[in-house]
Image (tube, rainbow, N blue to C red; front, side, top):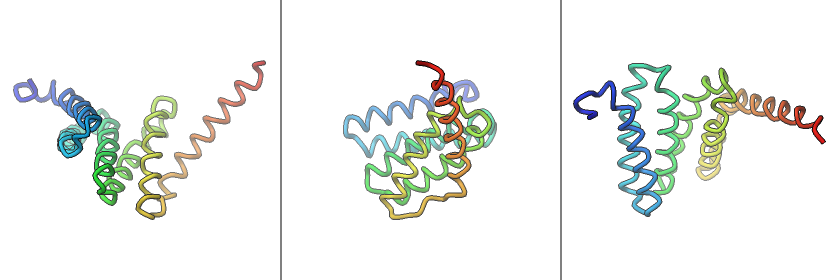
Length: 150
């Protein structure tokens, strides 16, 4: 289907490849998982190049998955690059719609931070600070809403 009507089915193909990569990884087939994750990123890069607003968040998600698979294979420097790109790509969407992207953003920040620690790198605070500030505001709002409930 994706070959016959790429504009209609390539996004679904990329999602399916991501899912397949996750299943393969869970089965311990990490090299195969990495190959599927790389293919998903390739497709999503092409989609995001053509329609950035529609596909960058999904590209960020695929990059985060790729970072995890690379890390599992001990390729942590490469993983760190993918994780940092994922945070950078999703950041503007999170800043525009914090509630809509908070779960994804938190996951990507955790991946990035963990890889910074394992590679003995300093996190890019210029990248992280605006995002962490939003999380603090979200948490403060959430706490103040619950203060009146007893």
